[in-house]
Image 1 (tube, rainbow, N blue to C red):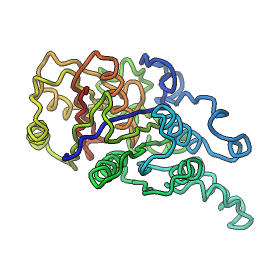
Image 2 (cartoon, rainbow, N blue to C red):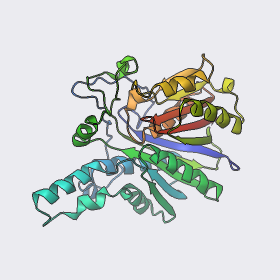
Image 3 (cartoon, rainbow, N blue to C red):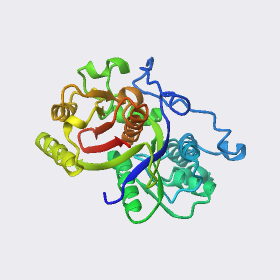
Length: 337
């Protein structure tokens, strides 16, 4: 990148206590199904009560995370708002479809339909912060957050001083059941602490909302670059990782933290073995999906985890590698400034 980009602030609502205070990841116990639910904060300080009662769960999560990110940056109006979501508001979509069947397409409440559109969160952020600049939402399954991040970097290269970038997805019981029928989740109850050694197909489902304020003003963490690969084979992952590090002038020995999207799915975890094999054996590793579960925009939580590790001072250079069921692969390089 010609212009250096920095992560000036971030915020995350996740299954962990990540929204406020110091972040200490924990293995959360599962009792009923392989699903990690977010721990929702109090929304009263962010959303007026008369609006709060009409908003769905995902809208509240997305808007509150974005506002907290802007508060952390002390920057109320970003130069652009760019987000990614794999599914949008599933709760509103399911409610609208159920109403169509129940009321036979008559007397339908339009609110669930309006709120189920993918760009609802972006619109709410723009309205609340009076931001009239560039506003875009990407819906590209496992590449949704990655394209939002790429577009953010392009906007900065073209002159934007700061961009609010985020990823968010929720999980409903109905959607969990549908995806379980096509092998997305582990069929036997598996605890997050045991999922990497489970030796079974499928992942643990998750959800979350994560936002970053990315800009040109120097900050503690620099976003060096990112690269996406679509359906690569093992040789292409190795070759692309080598080229990615060379392009950004970073030796593999200089990386002291590998943030991995390994999910314990035996069908696809071999890609992480390949990436780890290209790095020094002594490198520290964090497998972030043990703490947030698998979902389309889980890479956003992975990048937030890498940022927190760099901010703690324990590491200087972090490489994030994530893929979504073996199809969409991403490298993101972060460095302490």
